[in-house]
Image 1 (cartoon, rainbow, N blue to C red):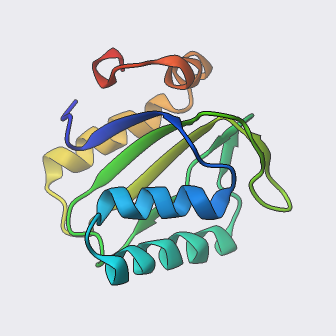
Image 2: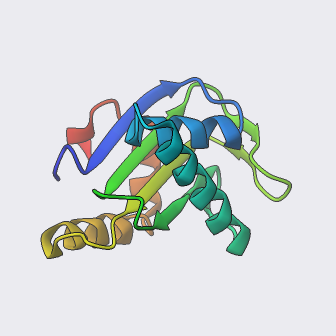
Amino acid sequence: MDDNLIQLFSEVEVTNRSEAYEFISNKFYPNGNEKALLIRQALYKREDTGNIQIDEGVVLPHIEDEIVDQTFVAIIQPKKVIQRWSSEIANIDLIIAVLLSPNESNEEKKQIARFMRQLADEDFIKRLKTIKKIKDI
């Protein structure tokens, strides 16, 4: 997989959804406070439309938005389990954030689709919780 498309972040110091969304948006736009804020707002808005928990201990915050100029997938392993993500979601030990650009190339769309299909495999999810290098995917 393209190392720039999917990135792994281990031992991340986030204790709640707000900190996680701030981490994600700041990784995507490290110098763009206004754009980072728009990313966070889009993630919250998406979550308002439906549950993002895809497995026990795993959330998949995702958006497709014009603010995203290049698709980015962040596999985030929190340093400690996030006890309360929201009123419906708790005990999160893996965050898979997907920020999709509506103008993505067909090849990158295919890569994302392959990756997303793998999320249905429990063994793949378990591996994502423990890997230390992105090449281990």
